[in-house]
Image 1: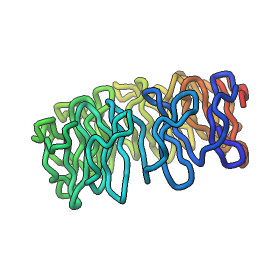
Image 2: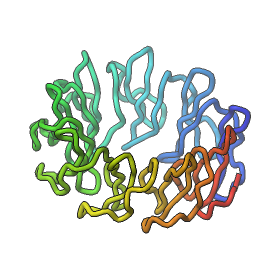
Image 3: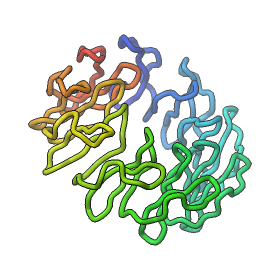
Image 4: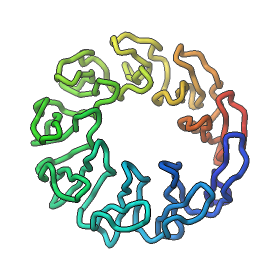
Length: 290
């Protein structure tokens, strides 16, 4: 929650549990949350105490026991004691996922293990973290997928692509979007003007400038009718109609009518919404809790 440009934390019924005092703050992960004080980032525990002092130029939440931090314009990794576990040496880095982390050095992307040594040498123009055993990479302006050996499982052939989620990945070819399986076969042929990955069994797609939701058969579960739409989170999705956002369930029924200027994802039963310039927080019934 935010008051007078300072961030703090509320619980699920809207009680302030950590007073607003930070210049920015992220959700908790693994018992700690990244906060910003001045121009530096650190970590707090769930009581609001500084677990790791604000000393980093950038910091991300912990994942698989390590967190990516930026020091002196280079990226490295700390452990939960705040000790530098993998020295800052990379031009860019992502958090660890499935035992590996994507890092960038000399304008090429590769993957390191938790020893800090390269498991897959820097060679790709673009790369994402591993998800469901595969990683999306770009080579010579085409996207494909590699396994943890670094070998291509699905050769680079797509004009755009996302990571695998729920067994499928969104890809773009010939200016249309569809979905492939882990063998590279199209399960949903390219037919959409835009698309996102699946979340909670449904995926947002756009046709003729309207957004709707498909199931894994490729059939529309919620017909394209919205001016904009977000993925489902905790059973609800934020959608826009006539410049106002509300929340629908998986049948497409509005559970919270369109009334907000901005409406975020639900996280642990709470979503941030905006009415004008005012930030508020609602529960899943649309009641303001803060």
